[in-house]
Image (cartoon, rainbow, N blue to C red; front, side, top):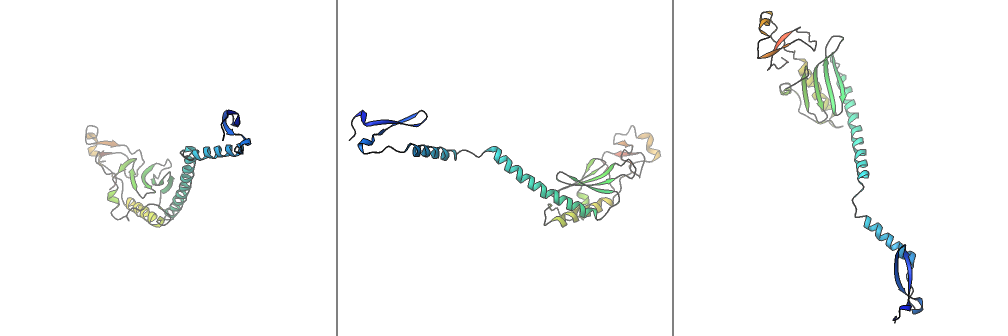
Length: 218
C-alpha cells in the first residue's frame, strides 16, 4: 500500500503538464509517456470531428459542380443553335447568352439593328422584344408546342418549339402606324401616342405616328 509521498515520482507528459505516478518499487509500472501522448492526440483529433466542414472546401466543391453543370448546358445550347440554324431563316441569327439563346431578326441595311428578339431560356421560357420593347408573347404561342426545359433527352422538342415560334413571328409584319400625310399636322399635339421616326430601319415606313397601345406586330 502506498502511503508516503516519497513513493511517487513525477513524470513530464507534454510541455507544462505534469502528473504523479506510483513508483516502480511498489510493483506498479507507470504508463508509457509516448502512449499517453498518442492517446491525447487521438482525443484531440476526435474532438475536431465535431467542427463544421471547411467553408472554403465546401465552396470549392460547389464551384466544381456548378462549372460541370455549366459546361453541360453550354454544350446543349451550342447543339440547339446548330439545329435551329439548319432552317436558315433569312436575316434571322442565333446568339448564345448565359442561360439560353437569343433568336434575333436584323434590319436589311448595312448598319444592322435588331428589330425582333426572341429570348429563349434553357428552362423553356420565352420572351419577345420588338424594337427593344417587351411584347406579350401569348398570342404567338397558340400553335406552338408546350414549354420544355433544355436537357439531353428534350433537345429536339426544345428546338422544335423555338422554330415554330420563329415561324409565327415571321408571319407578322411590324405595324405601320398612322403614317398618312393627312394626319401629320396633328401628330405633335396628339396625346394618344408618339412619333416613330423609324430608328430600327424598318422597310414598311419612314416615319409614322404610333399609339401607346400599339402591339407592334400585326
